[in-house]
Length: 399
Image 1 (tube, one colour):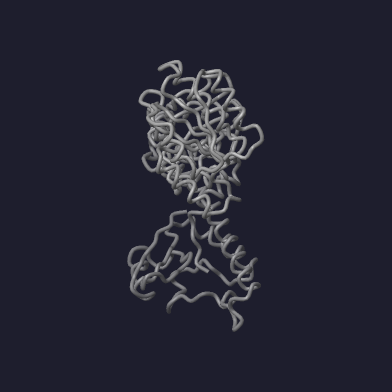
Image 2: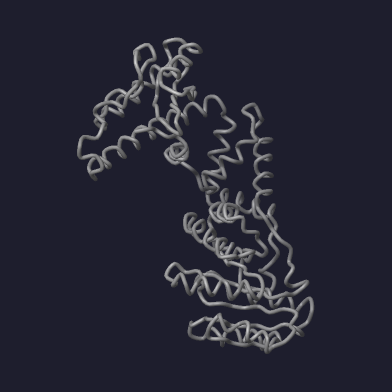
């Protein structure tokens, strides 16, 4: 079904535009007023007549009058059907719930029609959308990657094109801390692999530069045995290890230590949802004041959680990301979508606990290839309902 939007100062002018271009057989799908203008969305092909009946049935099932209105039936400005105009008790929970149900029904029907139309008009794009959903990419990223694909592209060529574009969206930075040093604080939730990442970076430093000029610091970590674990790593690598009870004590400690080429700070569970916001803000301010912050995100996170956590870290001033536990992941799309959305550059990835071999610099093309390999290995597939729901959020039905 072909849909087209018209805007005009008033409904009469909008209808005049529709009639002049399509005659009386176009179907009005919905209308709304926004920013002082009228928006009129119409279906403009013969196939819409059959589809209009589907929309009408969905609307009536939710208690509304006809929604799809032929232009020939409109002799005056279109009004919202009386069945969905709130009475004097407008704003009540019952009415709001009914309106939301009606909106959902209409958007679901329109999304199904749009998906069927897409598979017919642009099968290459539809196939790629299915693959994106199977990879676990979020809707916004998948839609933006499809913008560069024309409907007449060959599938293999189009797939390579979008995978290249996907790789280009993944920001990475070089392994600067094991080559040039600096102060790097790692933050992450319990079980994220943060301590293993600290160990891997320290081991890479020692292999490249020897133990001199490097220190390890445990800061604000109340976990039992956390400092002892870091101290054992320090003894194994020949690197001095220190501890401060509070993150705010870090600047004073670094002043006492004097010039150091590399300082790795293993923090507590900074950034947890349960943290006091004011304390968390002060902690991040302190970490920013002494150097760089890298967030540790495990690939086993659910997509929604990864997106929320990555966005939160980005707002807190985190400047790099370490993707961990790749060897345990069934899908990478959610994590990669999250770091792209948050504009967090990846610096390292880990896929095991062997040090330092299982920590390596992040490479965007390798991560995209791994995401595809995981999808093929685990047989992840997107059903029709998921694909329709991805279109549903991009359609807006005015209630």
